[in-house]
Length: 160
Length: 330
Ligand SMILES: Cc1cc2nc3c(=O)[nH]c(=O)nc-3n(C[C@H](O)[C@H](O)[C@H](O)COP(=O)(O)OP(=O)(O)OC[C@H]3O[C@@H](n4cnc5c(N)ncnc54)[C@H](O)[C@@H]3O)c2cc1C
Ligand code: SF4
Ligand code: FES
Ligand code: FES
Image 1: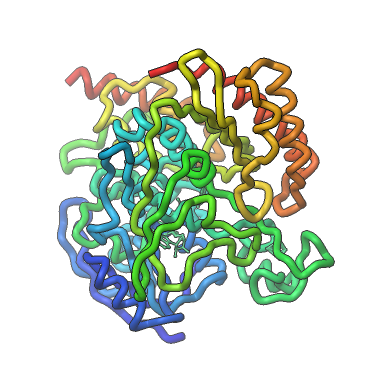
Image 2: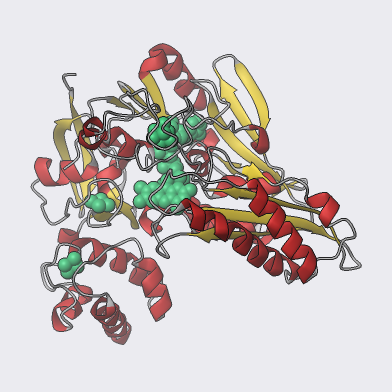
């Protein structure tokens, strides 16, 4: 069946943009192929792995199974939106220091899930971190370094 | 990459608009709530609707409230909201627990309870890409004419795999359903039929509006789920038990539902006679567990050994009943 193209209005990382995409695109497809924001990864592309996690109105959401129209009128934050022009997000810095990213494919999704956790819970326990990241698969690190990095980032943010 | 088939998306704000779209597009349309079941299935070409009618912004499908002894939940409420809502946690903790054990956190942020009630049945030979299914010659449930599980028979035995319906069943929940022709009420226990191809007694074009759960101060329920990993996975087996706890510590109306095995959640039978004197001691629990075992006959509809899944029925029932015994009074 031939497809229709639609113009959707998205709010991504603080910018309001209009993007013309096939009406059957998911949010990750609109981000990567419509807006060139390739930080968000397309892994399994069917809801199993968490690589495509972005924040929609602050909540971790799988962009590979979200029809793009469902993101309209909502605030989307991708990994590109975590840092400010002045500084990287403390999570990004601590992932670097602790070797919490190896191949890096899961990292953008994990950073988004972890950023939402720290926004709602400045002092999470190890179990709370484990639970918040339980929908993000990582095949490289064995998770321990990721948990340690999230704890370090939380401590640094509290210190400020 | 798994591309979706082409469709047009509609996002009505009012229930009447959603019903009108359904009437206009007929068999070409399908409703979608969180999309966490339907979108992956569409990527597998199990459904190819030309029009998707999004329910997530429809006002009438939202809200969680307690009044007059009923807990009412809008069908488009997400499993995350349900899992953490104070009224749900206080009045029906087993429902909050079940919602918390579906999939992973990102999915629960989108997945709705209405979609959970309408979850398509699942099978190793069905939840696969078109490429995979074509290579095998398809199957009875979709595009083919044989069942790779039973090999003979003309019946699909794909598994009902949703976590909240068994809890809603033991709690005696009711559903408000509307269609183009009017509205009706369905008890959750009457929603399902044992047909893996389509196990719901809902007509095309009917929308689940809300779930109503009677709150009985005496009711206690326990939910348990068996799965491969502690997160993300669908159940290999879900058991829910419930009972009414009397002032004297005796139990009445001990009941149980098992799912993840056959095409619909199975209400266990024959428990009244076993638990008739209201005691839940270890011997009674063992008899109830054995009675459940005798009623469950899982087939190879998922990659995990059906004999093991069957052997786990009495184990999980017994654990659930022991937990029920220790649930405290409010
Ligand atoms: C990796 C993964 C793991 C999962 N694990 C679990 C699990 O452990 N347990 C579990 O129970 N589920 C699991 N799921 C399935 C799914 O996420 C949930 O069942 C969810 O609750 C479905 O809700 P939804 O709103 O996303 O449904 P949708 O995908 O939007 O819809 C599902 C079906 O219901 C119909 N529908 C939706 N809402 C209505 C309504 N109001 N009225 C009429 N029809 C309606 C749709 O037309 C569709 O046929 C998993 C999914 C994935 C991808
Ligand atoms: S049980 Fe048989 S017919 Fe049903 S989905 Fe599986 S293989 Fe297909
Ligand atoms: S790419 Fe979205 S969950 Fe795997
Ligand atoms: S760093 Fe490779 S998958 Fe996580």
